[in-house]
Image (cartoon, rainbow, N blue to C red; front, side):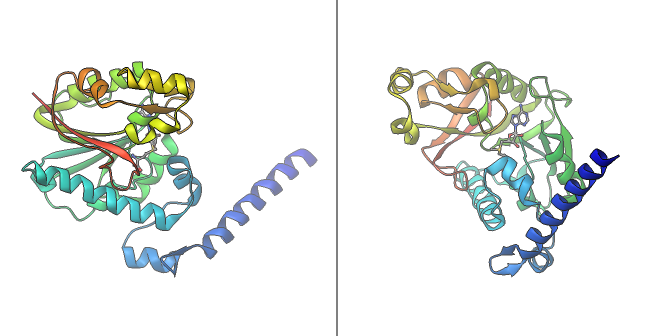
Length: 263
Ligand SMILES: C[S@@+](CC[C@H](N)C(=O)[O-])C[C@H]1O[C@@H](n2cnc3c(N)ncnc32)[C@H](O)[C@@H]1O
């Protein structure tokens, strides 16, 4: 059938384009394959990086992942904890493994990642064998049993959810966290205030969250902004706020970093 031939040809053409783009790709000056050999593990394709980061830049992906891991270590250390101390760690909204790949050589904790996007999880499952990955639903509880994890981190996830889903996920993450366990989240805070529309600024300044394109929640099209009093009073309900660093989420530019503890 001519229509089918055309579709096959278009698909093959697209695939060829992706292969040749990848062959030209450089990571810190090195061809991609050589960089992967040096790193000791594969780098995701640009189209998957784009899904989580709105850029296909592999060097950005690797550098900011390392920075994010450093800021996790720093905030834990400043509060008397080390990532190696934990038994089970969950990267909620792990994307294509930008941060969890940084723990590949960690000894001690078991590593888990979950995301609602099956393509991202499929890549992580195939390429990052040191961790276990699951697909969760956008708005249903995790399959994990209560009190499964000692430490959960969510980088740039609550920044893309509607308010009802933010509350839902805070409750579910509270459920799967062990008593005394830690939850780390990042938010868009005061840094973004000048970029909001006047009515949104008024809403934010009165202590309420602002969510743009809530109907696109889960994707980067949806953007949520959180004043600190809102995080403390609403999102962090049931947690102790151990630390908050304005714009402290290195590798997730200009996002606030909160470290919470389940009572
Ligand atoms: C901006 S990306 C950040 C990805 C990753 N945390 C990182 O820092 O590279 C947001 C991620 O959250 C995921 N996500 C959004 N809503 C989710 C939900 N309800 N459950 C699990 N993952 C979710 C998206 O699929 C995406 O991978």
